[in-house]
Length: 383
Image (tube, rainbow, N blue to C red):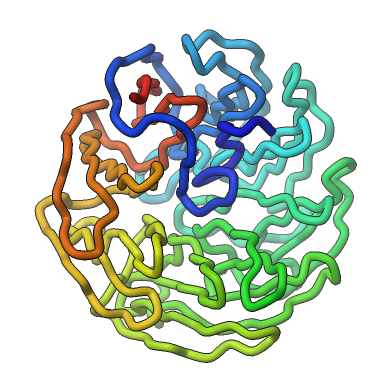
C-alpha cells in the first residue's frame, strides 16, 4: 500500500481521515458515466476500484485515477431487486489488501479478484450458503481484512459474522446469529487490545480476530422492525462510540480489556442515520438526525456527549477529515470545507462538485478527491 492510498471505506484506518497533501478542490480532472450503486470508491497502487451494476451484472473495475480510463473489468450475474424501488446496485465499498480486491454485492456475492489484472481468485454466494434472509436494502457491509482473514457481516443463522481465508476463500470461523446491519466494521487498538468492531442489526460485537471469537456483545438497535444500523463504530483510545437513528440514539463506552462501561447515552447529542462522524482531539464532528427530515451538523464531546455547537440547513451528507480540515459533502453534491474547530463552524469554502444525489463516501488519494452519484463518478485535484 502506498502512503496516499485509500484502500477501503473511509480510508486506510476506516476513520475517515486523510493525511496527504490537498484540502481544497481546484480543478475537475474527469467525469464518467457509471452504473447503479452506492458503493464508495477505493484506491490503491495506482488503481481506482469501482464497484457498480450495469444491466444484470455487478462489475468490479479498475480505472486510472488520473484520467478515468478503464484498466480492467470483472463481472458476474446478479438478480437483486430492491423491494422499495431504490437503487439496485452494490452498496458496499471494495476492500483492497495485499494485491487483492474484495467485494460484497447487494445479494451477498463475495468475490476476491487480483488487483493487477482483475482475474477471479475465489468467490462465495454467502446468502445461499449461510441461508441469509433478504434484508430491507441489500447487503451493504464492506469486508475487512484482519489476521489473514476476510471478515464479513453475513447475517445468517449461526453465521452472523463469518471469517474467510483471504487467500482461498475457505470459511475459517462463524460468530453469532445476528442479522446483518448496513454498518461496516472497523479494526483498531482500543483499551489495550486489537479489536474488530461490528455494529450488526442487533448491536455491537467485539471480535477477537486472532482467536476467532466474540470478546463482547451488546444490544444496540431500535425496537422498530423497520430500523437500520448504518453508521460505523468509532474507536478512539479507550472509547468506543456507537450511534443510530429511529429513537436509538448514541452511546459512548469506556473500554478496558474485556470490560465495557457506559460513559453516556442519549438520543439528543449525535444520533447518526447513515453517516459516520470523524474524531479529532476528543471531539466528534458529524450529522445528527434522520436523513429525510433534515439534519444538523454538530461538534460533540466524545466522552461526555456535550453538544459544543450545531448548525442546520445542510440537510444530509458525509464528513471526511483532511489534515485539520473537515470536508463536508452534502447529498446535493456541494462540498463545504471548514476547520475542525470545537468552538465554531465557520465554512472556508463551498464547491458544487456533482449534481444529483451523492450518498456514497468519497475517496481521497494522492491529492485527488473522487466521488460518485447515482449516474456518474468524477475526480478533482486538491490543492
